[in-house]
Image (cartoon, rainbow, N blue to C red; front, side, top):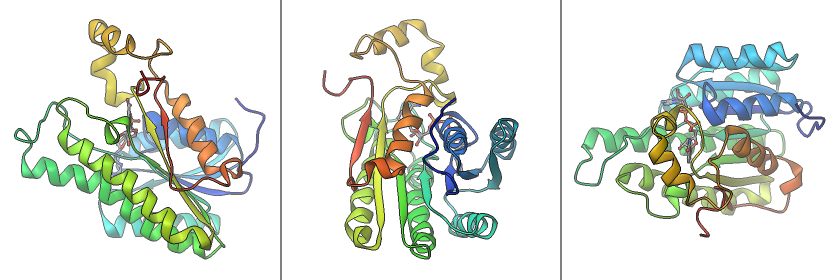
Length: 254
Ligand SMILES: NC(=O)c1ccc[n+]([C@@H]2O[C@H](COP(=O)([O-])OP(=O)(O)OC[C@H]3O[C@@H](n4cnc5c(N)ncnc54)[C@H](O)[C@@H]3O)[C@@H](O)[C@H]2O)c1
């Protein structure tokens, strides 16, 4: 899969790692030598990710975690430190949001759930993750934002607000903790083939319409995003912090 080993001996947490981008990122971190905590509310999916990592001869463990819960995120970080002795990298990636909702269509419950799972989760991950990283002299955080946090997207109100918040929070963490050895960046995927986008990939006309706007002529695959996450988490991006890296096949500049 790779002959690189940028994370040998590192302890890495990936949230939302039962599926899609998070699963691929967890597999790639493990393939490059990391000991990975696969965190997700979906226990069976997280187990399947760990099974895939172990089948390849690498190291991972499941952490059943609801990322919107303070106690659950604290215990996710404590579990990684207890098992692997430290925390070097945190990839805050889990999300939930309703689709096809303008502001007036969005219920209070949908708004609050989106903010809790997609934005508060990043706050909680950073809060406990930073405390653990400071114990070993620093670390790196990579948050999954979205192009929808940078430009408008139709009928996606709560998600856009949450992802805009993720981008701002990324800058806040970068500002406050850089001198203590913590870098914090975000990746902003465009259309990527995962469970979340199944309805788009199942509708050829819609897919053709959307991919026609992409300068590279294709939608993203989870590995396209995973490799950007690994770069931002690695020493190769050692002079970058507070940035949001757009990985979208050229959609935003077109
Ligand atoms: N797929 C795309 O086109 C795309 C585009 C831009 C941004 N993103 C972002 O990429 C990230 C990953 O999305 P994906 O496309 O891989 O989706 P996905 O549906 O494949 O994975 C999302 C994961 O989050 C988990 N999750 C949901 N609620 C949770 C909770 N409360 N606690 C813990 N885990 C929870 C799910 O169980 C699932 O495993 C998200 O942050 C998403 O906003 C995706």
